[in-house]
Image 1 (tube, rainbow, N blue to C red):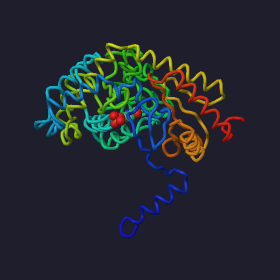
Image 2: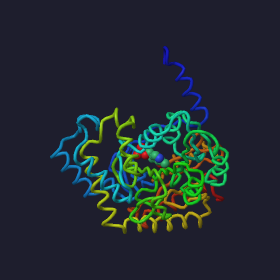
Image 3: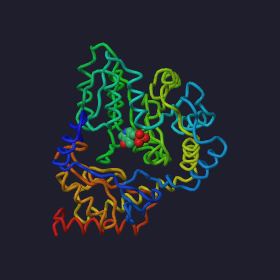
Image 4: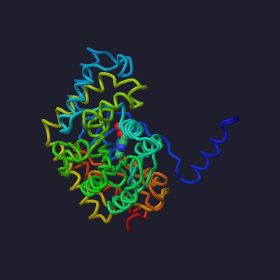
Length: 395
Ligand SMILES: *Cc1c(COP(=O)(O)O)cnc(C)c1O
């Protein structure tokens, strides 16, 4: 590429040399347990469609009906004319579901994290953040220009030590963790972190992107899972994963939410959800209440699949949730393993540095409620066949 952007061609070559280059796979069907992608039928263990809602008839009907009645776009940002009655209805519904005073829906989970942290903190403040927190949290922290202190993964004692050291420092403190960590599938130590935050007067925030619809009663998330209602100031969740549509939400006290209406930049400067998205989300929360058996099935499938993997000798790390990493070592191996699996009819994402540390490359698999035992058996057979061929497992 000639011209001013040619340095990017060099940067891309560097990515290729390091084995981090990828091509986007094209999904040619709906997101289902078995789908078509790049011309091949594959078992899909790569999506975040935990409950199978992304192609659920009730969500589709609700979306189609909303398009017929309200059109395809909201026409403006929320503060101009873009607040539709259904936007407010969804916020009320989520607040009630989460047992909080109020809720605020963003266009995505990413903007929910980035928009919230940057709205409430200033350069005089301090953020104490788990080292494996999601990129959207990290970006929100950077945008706030508050001082960022990173604690060792899940190490509440380390967080305590950092906060104790800040006791006499001016400014507000925010303690922040993922509810479920997206690369390892482990659960954040929320009870210990909440106590730490309470001892030091810090704001407690949890990102429940991978816990929404997965953990807690009817999928209420990690605060419900640990019975910490009323003790976590800010709960973020996503509508893009288990909920099957798109969006992010923030739940908390009424005045906190009202403040976000006035200061959260993605809310003030970016158009609200189209009617189809909001209607699908409303239908999804009805389903969470009406069909808790979906979540039971998700966990049943998770136990079944993870047991089978361990019996085959796979290293699935510290996963406690449907997110199931399979460790292989180097990034190159992970990407080669992922490609070979795809050829053999299994879609599982290869993940390496810089998304995860060097030497901890993996393929990440995610079980859903809609996989059958036959799908899971076939997936484990394929994984073990290819892993033995590639010497990832002893032949
Ligand atoms: C996926 C994810 C997000 C972003 O959610 P989107 O709705 O996809 O933007 C935020 N936090 C975590 C931990 C995630 O895994």
